[in-house]
Image 1 (spheres, each protein chain N blue to C red):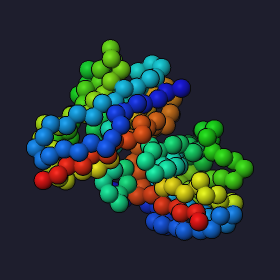
Image 2 (image 1 turned 90 degrees about the horizontal axis):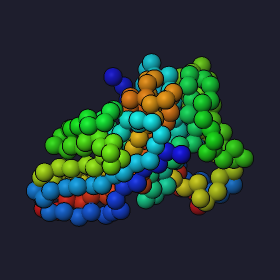
Image 3 (image 1 turned 180 degrees about the vertical axis):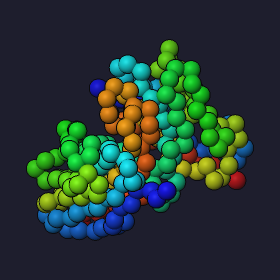
Image 4 (image 1 turned 90 degrees about the vertical axis):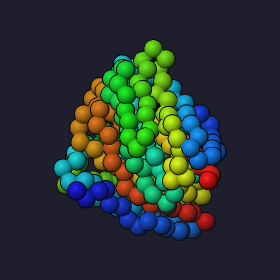
Length: 114
Length: 113
């Protein structure tokens, strides 16, 4: 079974530039998550999709971050314009439905804003 | 809201030492509890889980028991190896609806030979 795929693995941009991350979840998983992991901290949820609808985006900084999940499969997370404090690892995860089920994570995209 | 508190790191142990990483949680209802591990340069991997009170999750010599009375899910291993060096995250997921995982801050473990 293929895992969660993310690209790119690494990205370095200057502040005020824009950047986009891509995620392909495990086949058949209806739920997709984007998490932000700042160095030394645990992952923090940015947005959760159920199929192609948003379930929770309460912690997404909507003035600069946007995300979409067209056709309920792949997803893209965008930052525009980037700030220095956006430097982090961006993790995509997917899961099947059910409270007891675990989420499966991709390897993440390490973003450095200079 | 739901939250997870785990012991501060880093933790440094000698090979074959006993490991305990404490984790307590705050949640409404009866969440499912998880331990994830992040090896250097890799993504998060599920280590073990428990979905109801008194359940014991186990994998690769690691164990954790879901204690509802103390709202805890402490991770233990009887004899650590150098290859266990990683960051360990405790997490919970509510059982009502399709709720996301909520993570603790992580505990870095270094095992020296």
